[in-house]
Image (cartoon, rainbow, N blue to C red):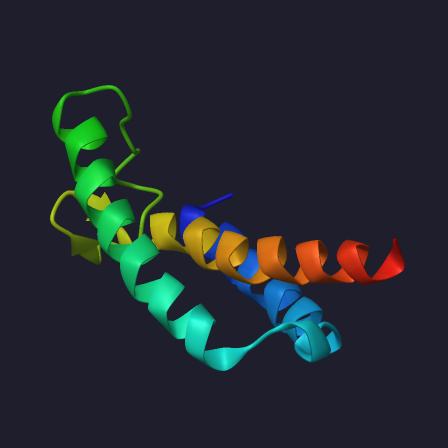
Amino acid sequence: MCYLLLTLTVISVLSVYGFLMRKWLVAKPLLATTGVMLTLTAIFDNVIIGTGIVAYDPGKISGITIGLAPIEDFAYTVLAIVVVPSLFNFFRTKL
């Protein structure tokens, strides 16, 4: 499976999840968090790829990169930005 297909799968599931959990997601904090987290992901992914800790098969990535980090690598950051606060708020209201 190529990373792009895996990323599209994650984004598809995330879209459905985000729609279902929209009650627990507040736009302003999410936008600020997204900016910070994507910046940190870009920095640290480039460091770990540049030092050789992580390597990607060039035949399985889309070829679009931010520095050394393939664009597909950012999908998991976006996933965490949506899933963590919605689950936190969901379970907080149930207690």
